[in-house]
Length: 256
Image (cartoon, rainbow, N blue to C red; front, side):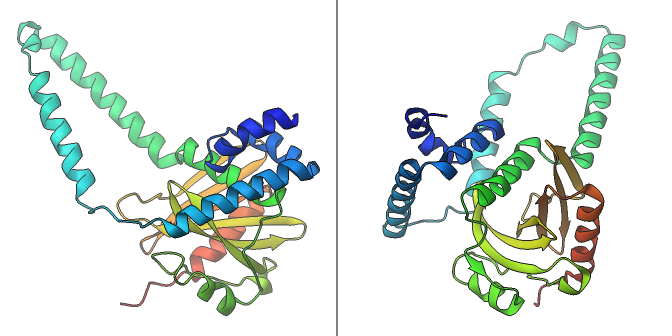
């Protein structure tokens, strides 16, 4: 990748709009080009300054529901036709059977694998954290140092668990963006490999038990006690599952 192309991709790179291949190429170029890296850091500083000085207003949690309900009502009125009245009853039964089959397939797929877009976004965040030397905002093996660091930066308090005695030591944490929101990324190490454990409130979109694999990167997701967890690493699948099970077993319900 040349500097001219990298300059054009800086904004979509910062916005998380690049696919995995372009993201990796961009980060390889940044690792070896001080000029483009300085341009990236200047843009990041500008974004941070604008974000810090711009007032933020949180929309009502019922706004999206009202908008969707309104759109469904308008769509229903616009499409209200009686085309089905002239169909033979057997055709209606066949159509209903097909619809039920499609619904069953959709339910099965949604329960067996996470959104590929979300998984790819998590992989890109993981790769980016390694390529541009931004693995951690707070470097510490002490969970009582990492957890308080997130206070005031997120609207929730992530659980931070140390698994050093089991061979997966905690080494720090950072603030990241996933699924269009700020999330906590808790960082663990296994020999020469790193694990990004993203965590955020499930709200009305729980992940459930999910897994995904792409280009030797593994993504394991689950929901427990109202929180979503997404573990990402190039670590072997067996060891990543071992890590995930240990985290699950130590997650405790939040205090009322």
